[in-house]
Image (cartoon, rainbow, N blue to C red; front, side, top):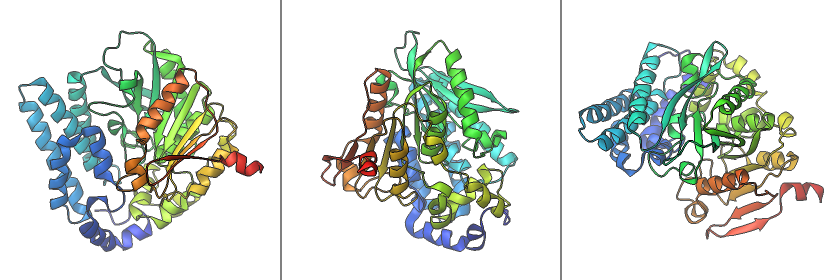
Length: 413
């Protein structure tokens, strides 16, 4: 373990993280079990129950999840039924993803894990119930890695397409469900990608900078325009967590998109809450994502440039924001402020008492509309040419939606 990596809080107070992990379990800083199980399905629950029983300190995470991934990979290779092999390869890939997460330094061990993840996901792709294709979009001296999914039953015609990214801890393999994906089921093609600093990209040398995603967005949209499967007039964006920032950067600078939906927001300028008030694991990982894992002062200076306000005025297509009004990583007033500044329609879906990840058991999240379904339906309306409007759908603990005044109305009052 390199004791020079990460922020001071992380390096000098590791015992606190290990203590909290022992008492709160694997989800001490974020619901990683919940968001990883969402694409995997309930069949993967035992893997995470075993992990929870064996992981008692941060250093346990890589070896335990690697061992669980290797078990799934063995099951896949031994399977005689292609569906059984498909499912186990998919589970193995996502368990390798989870094993990679705690490694915040460049090195052959990280590359080896990522190669095994890619091999398993490629094996899944060859057995999948729909077309799945490995994509490497040229970017600088390296590439933006992606998986291109087409819905089952596709006949080859141009399709409405979602360019989709997760957050700083949710790479492209988590973006499309093994079965019953909300976007594929609605007839979308999905380009699930890792942008600069995210997932596989930094493993291949593509680190985060405050403008890198704007540049990557240009290359991603250009790639989509060249594919016959993509209807270039019906492209939209979807981004979650820190992807709510990154995808907004792309949407504000790529007028070809017909709309974008972002959720689980990271909209605070300078990111003080997530980097200085939350678990130091967030800042430690983002420092590595930026290539600044050994220079906290340089990272702090760079983080001040993480700010959507200079770009939001360029948003020309509708921009949906989905959030909890008690988000502990990005105070909601910053999302309200951006919605007020946005020149395009900027509707909002806000869950009362919802935290960052919009996970259960918050009553409004449990009983209200499924936020992924809401986003998928909203994006489908955009590619179908239906107009969007400035509204706030506020979800009460009963699950009912209360229509509230939009920040634009409040600002003009």
